Every structure is written in C-alpha cells, then in structure tokens.
Length: 406
Image (cartoon, rainbow, N blue to C red; front, side, top):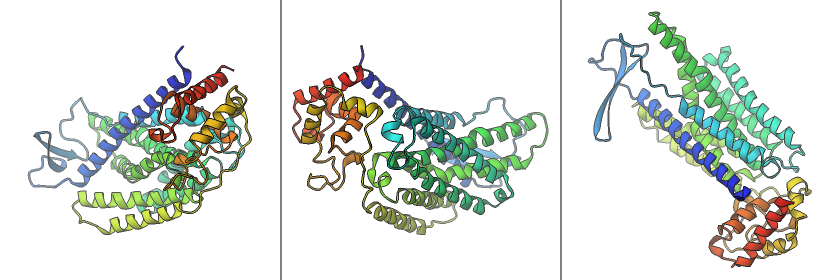
C-alpha cells in the first residue's frame, strides 16, 4: 500500500501548486487592469461613447484598447469575464487551510500556551472569523461612511489591526498571521463574487435591454477593486510568513503584520501614481524602507519562549510508539544543534522555521516533519552536515510507521 503520509504530502503539494498558479493569474490580471485603467488617454480620435484609449505592444504585436464607461452602440454577445482567477485562488487557499491547519490543528493551529482550545473550537473560530470579516467589511462599505474613500480605508485598516491582535490571542503565531491573510483574501474574493460581478451583470443586462445603467453600480465596483489593489501585496506577505519565524514567532507579530499593510499602501501608491502619469513619488519608497526597517527591528525582539505543551493526541501516540527512545537519541544528536532555543551552529541565531527538537516532547510533536524531512527524503540535515547514517533514517521511518499502524 502506498505510504499514506507521502500521499498526503503530495495532496498538499498539489493544493499549494494550484493555489500559487491561480493567485498569479488573479494578481496579474488585477494589476494589469489597474494599470490599464489609470493609464487611459482621452484623445480627439476616440470612438463615440468611449472614455479613453491605450496603445500597447506585447508579444510582437500591437493592441489598441478602448474603454467604455457604459457600452458602445453595439455590445457583442461574447464578453470575457475576469472572475475565475479570484474564485479559484480563494478555493485553493481554503483547501490549504483545511489540509494544513484544520487537519493538522494540533501541530499548526492550536497552541495551548496561547489558548487551550479543542480542535473543533479552533476550527469554529477560524471559520467564524472569515465570515465575520466579510460581513463587517461589507457593512462598512454600504454604510454612509462608505462614501468617504479615505475614511473607509482607515476604518478597514483599523479592522485589520484589531484582527491581527485578536488572532494572536487564540492561535499559534504561525496560524495567526496565516489567518490574517485568509481574512483579507476572503474580503478580496468576496468583493469579486458578491459585489463586482453582480454589479457588472446588472449593467450588462440593462444595456442589452436598452436601459441606461445606474452609474453607482460602476462606482461601487471600482471602489472595491481599489481596495483589492491595495490589499494584494500584504496578503502575499502574510501567506509567506509561515515560513519565517522572524515574522510569526516574535512578541510583536501582530504589529509586524499591521505595518505590512502600510507598506502595501506605499508601494501600490507609487505604481498607481506612475501608471496614471501623475508624477513619480519617490518618497513612497523612502517610507517603505523605513517601515521595513522598523519591522526588522521588531523581529529582533527576543522570540517568545516556547513552553512545552503536554503530550496528547497524535503526539502522545508517537511518543509511545516502539523505537521512540532511539529516534529521540538520533534527532538530538543530528538535529538539535540547529533546532534549539539557542542553536549551537556557528552563525545561526534561531531555529530554522522555528522548529525546536531538544526534548522528547518536541520531537513527538514534530514527528511528521522529521519523518518526511529526514526519513523519507534526505532534506534534513542540510547537505547531511551532521552525517545522519542510512540506518538512522531507517529507524525514523520504522518508528513513524509503527506509530501510524498502532
């Protein structure tokens, strides 16, 4: 029978690959249309009812693009709708949330030292928070405050800061920042699915029926697109954060995440201004660098001491499996010089990925990682710097499979 752990790893690889591909497609099309919209020129040669035009060159050909705020006199039956990129990105991202954080909740989602939650409670909080994010954001946009673009952006930022702090009070640091990214991405995809696309369908239906569309539908869609534009870069940062303990395992991880949203605004402001041909605001890069340096300084604050959680559930099963004492000795001898609170490897100041392997309890909690990284593959130790022998890797595999079979 094909090894279940290996098969499960490939399921996660497939989901992550699909998520990255669809995210590239969504972000690429989003950035392109924002740049296109901002760069439109109003010339005397514009066709009737056209708002602006743009000439572009790509792939050996020339493109002449006209934009109509309502529609030309002739509206073709075939229209290309840019929506599936957004839907697929959210769906694949949610599948990753389920595969990694829900089904691996004891390892990645729940930290008893933060909040001693049952798995079902943590999952319920996760799902509820994503739903809350869309409802709260949409309510703000539809309220009278939504007419003030700048004020609305400030309120949205305060909501994100509050959620950043809140997530760190209930989840592990890694899960907290990942959830903040998912929270934001849900708002973005909700904008497409629940606001932008329905508004566009109303406008198209009115045009085909010979009615004059209400201009507010386009204005609302444009406002939501603007929000998505400024939120994109922080979401990418948060999705990558789980790979870097300097981001998620520090005392001020929620504040780091909050500052990242400001960097997203400064970077996108430069591009948006440049595309709109309204100047070249270099000051935005100076502000971005300052914010980044503040983030780097905050990450240098001593990381949270990892208290040892009591063994339970899956970790307890691995600790009680035959061969655990031998594996503990192997891991402590070959891995703990790096995977320690104070690494002994010269030039290393913190454990890679924030994984500590100094005690039997820590080793039991990281059983799957050890099995995949040092048993099935030879990814660890890197370049086999600590000279882990084939019989030792075989012992890790035998122990893990005994625990799974038991």
